[in-house]
Length: 278
Image (cartoon, rainbow, N blue to C red; front, side, top):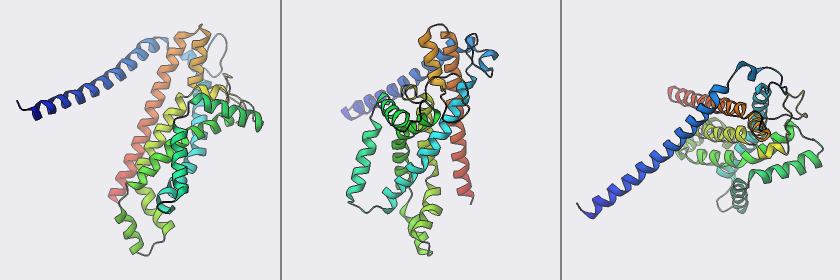
């Protein structure tokens, strides 16, 4: 056997081993959560109100959905429009583009606890919002902004230039080309970034403890405090009296994330198919 074949077999083994190890870790985590959490699921966990006798996670589910929608509502427009500027409007060699990209990469590496402290000082204290869903959503929107910007930027870059040239050739202007041709073609990539952002939102704990608070009820408005599912799970585990319910919360959180990801993938597939059919 030649040296080239040996190297090829070795590389193939490493690739398959890495893939198998990744899948094994994922399956192990899923099995552990399901084994620990499913036996603790009950209808009482989905009652409308949280009490000391029944640590219902229903308010946390509602708060998680509100927090996700509100964070995306703030971050997605800023992220998409920023990416459009960087790809479609900024000239090559523009120093502002370098500054924006460097800032985005820096924000991606900041620990969530730092975001939490910033959100506490800025939104809770300085702006006087107090512990509220709005303060938590504003903090999370800053956290997910780099993800949405980078994925949208790469999605826009992946659109062939022939699309733009064809649109210009038909007499369309820059703005019309971007929003009618380029942006729809980049929708699947943009949705991928939104899915990643949703995963970070529903799994965030540290930043929300300092901004949204830990009140285990459905708030009356966006200026009231409320805990999400990840914070609810952390609080139950920390208290030490309802660890079984904490595992059950993890199961529901896992199902929620899978459901959101599947829905986003389905929407992206429908949009792509509609473009092809059209």
